[in-house]
Image (cartoon, rainbow, N blue to C red; front, side, top):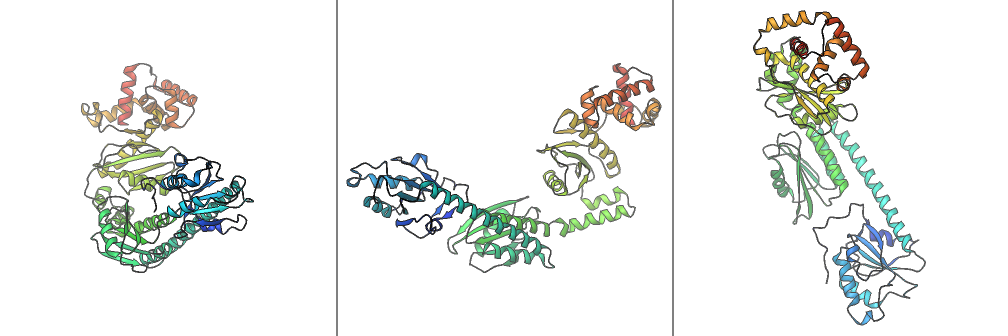
Length: 491
C-alpha cells in the first residue's frame, strides 16, 4: 500500500541527493530498517519536527527527523503510526529518520510496519548522531552535487563550442549533445525531414518527430516536452530561434536542470549554424554590403534586403552598461530585424516600416519616420534626436513626426534659404545649433536639455546666452521661438 504525493506540487528548487549517499556516511552511522531501497529516494532537505501531524509544515522531498516525542503511550495498539506515516507520504516526504534515545530506546515496531506498508524509507539515527549533524551532511552532499553538476555543464558547453568550430559543425554538435545527455539528438528541417542525428537509437524517433511537429510553427524560440512510455525516455523539442522551421529534438533517460542547460546551449549553436547567415537571405545582405562598399547607392542595394521600399531607423540606449554585440543582437531580434549596428553606447536598428516598434524593457528608444533608401541618413538623424528627447523626458520610446505641418505651406527651397539666413550667426558653431534645437524641443528646460546633451546645466545656460547674443533676439518671445524652431527643422 502506498500513497503518492500530489503531482501538481512542483519539486523543490534544490539539487537532491540520494538517500544511499547519506547511508554511506560512516560519520553518521545511519541504518535503513524499513521501506523500499529501490529506486533510491531523492532527499531535497532535512527537517526536524515533533508534530503529531507534520503535513502542514512539509514541502515535499524532506528527510523528516523525529525523536518520537509526539508518540503517545498507547500508540502501538491503535492506528496512530498508520495515520502518522500516511500523512508524511501524502505531503511528499522522501524518508523518515527516527532518533534512538533519549525518548525511545529503539524504533517502535508499529512504526517499522507502517513504513513498510506505506513504502516510506525509515532510517534509524543512533544516539551519537545529532539531527543537526544529519542536516549538515545533507547540505554538504547538496553542495558537492551542485558543484559536480556545474562542472558537468561547463565541460559540456566547452565541448559543444569546440564541436561548432569543426568542419562538420552540425553533426559534431549533435554527437557531443547526445554524448553529454546520454541519449539521442536529432535535427529536423523545415519540411520535417531528419537532417542529422546522433546517439543510440531507442525507438523514440517517431515520438521525437511528432513532438518536433508541435513546435515547428513557432516564429521564434519555443519548446515542448513529453515522455515516451515505450522507450522509457524523456523527450524534448526546441524550435530554433531562426524562425525558419528547424527543430532540435532530444531523447534522454533523465530530465535534470543541467541537461536542460546543455540542450539549450546546443540549440543556440545550431540556431547560429542554421540561421540566416547560412541562407540566401544572409548571402543577400553580404552582397548588399559589398555593393555599398564598392560605390553602389542605397536605393540600388535596398531590394537585396527585402521587398520593402520604406524603412524605419531605431536608436536605442540601454539603461545599464554599454551594449555589446550579443545585447544588440537580442534587441534586433526583439524588434524583428537582424540589421543591427553598435555605435558607442547606442544601438541602431534598421527595419521595414511595417514592423511595429514597441517599448523594450531596459532600453530607451528613438524612432524615425518611415523613409526610402535615399533618405536613410535623414532618418538616422531623426532617430538620434528622438532618442535624445526620450532620454531627456525619461520616456521609454519617442517617435519622430513623419512631416512638419508648416513644411507643407512653404516651398522647400524658400524654407531652406530662410533658415540659412536666420541661423547664419551661429552656423559656425554646431554645438550652439544643437543646443538651441534641443532646448527649444524641450520647452526651454535647462535640466532636460543638459541630460539630452550629456553636459552640465550651466553649459546649457552659457550656450543659450551665447545664441541670444549672436542672434540678437529675445528667446523668451514665443514668436521668436516658433520662427527659430521652424528654421532648425529645415537646417
